[in-house]
Length: 345
Image 1 (cartoon, one colour):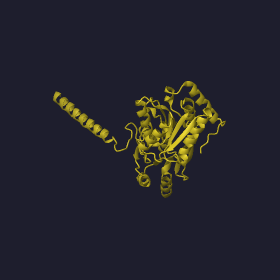
Image 2 (tube, rainbow, N blue to C red):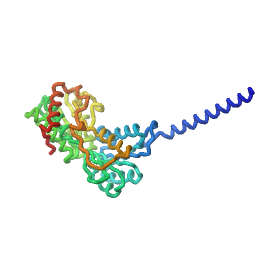
Image 3 (cartoon, rainbow, N blue to C red):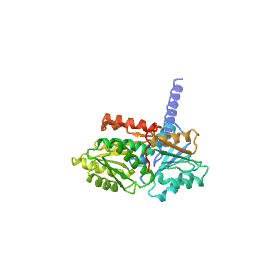
């Protein structure tokens, strides 16, 4: 009897070891790589792809915010998410088609530059779901998400107008386009609302992926006496921050106003006055979740101050005095109530 008990115990231990080994093997197989992410806590058959513009997924701004949101969606829902990076506009359609032909449930195009490519791919694949940020594509299978950038830019214009010590302020844009003009014109209107004597110097780099051009543009504006620059230049905006940081090390106090996400988290509070945040992340999460829940519908969604789709970064309290933030809130409410119409061009 004792012998039989001992044999049974040995067999039980052996079975336990085998089961444990199988569990470890399955856990290792669930780890994704090469831009794929998912969740080990939840499982889903949904696949969501994202195609960047030429700024790239690590642009410290627009594309990065979208990808981080998509990663969060994967972790929350178990959906498989992946990005493809575009090195030029010639990559847009091949990258989009890689997801569409691969039966992904949703394919994102990040940025207005992908509008034509999204439109073409959507037309050729009417049964596939696509979405785009910052442009409107008129197709029943495309969700277009746009923002009232001019309204958010007005608010950081109020900050710049009140805090400039030289009455010279700069704006560095990427490509000269209707979208970036909304940033510029809203910013200018905000400055003039609180400081009619301030002058705005504008410089477009012509690209969203050239930090060296952003740095040169910022240097020119700072050399002309500006002490604050607002950029809407994507990856080129990294150069604006680099120029400000270099001057800070030399004892010169200049400021940058970040864009799209809280850029103080990347470049620090020493030179980041505030950031005009576009909640691209929330838009990506919401639309992607619609796909996971089987509730996706094409159409246009416009996010404004009223929708909390744009605004100032929460960290603005570090460098912007309370009285200025209170003034910003007053103008925000006037815009929401329709008492102020912010120009967009």
